[in-house]
Image 1 (cartoon, helix red, strand yellow):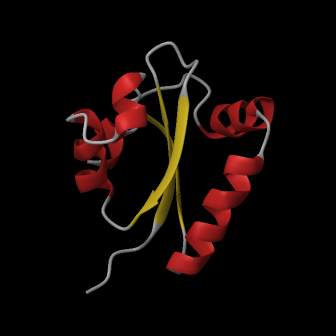
Image 2 (image 1 turned 90 degrees about the vertical axis):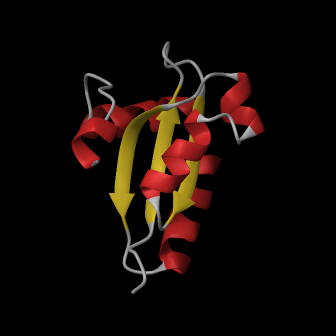
Image 3 (image 1 turned 180 degrees about the vertical axis):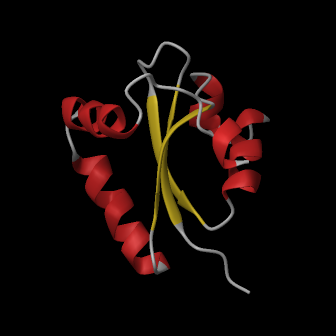
Amino acid sequence: MARQPVVYILASPSGRALYIGVTTDMGRRLEEHRRGLSEHTSRYNITKLVYLESHETAPNAIEREKQLKRWRREKKIALIESANPEWLDLSNEVF
């Protein structure tokens, strides 16, 4: 059975560095980030899940990921804060 695709945003502890990705296995992907298997997230210690949205299809999720990556930083922060104003690590709630 296929898992539902999600678009996610990770942040560094300070919130200065952000990473946007898409996956169908958030638990596995988050573990990869935390184990340092992604060069960018490892370099900037980007491991805190601060935003997550589900999509019906992988193409929809990929298109949304691309859209978010084109946004200016201020707009990304506003999106995060609209759903997670305290910038809590959502991985505790999701898993």
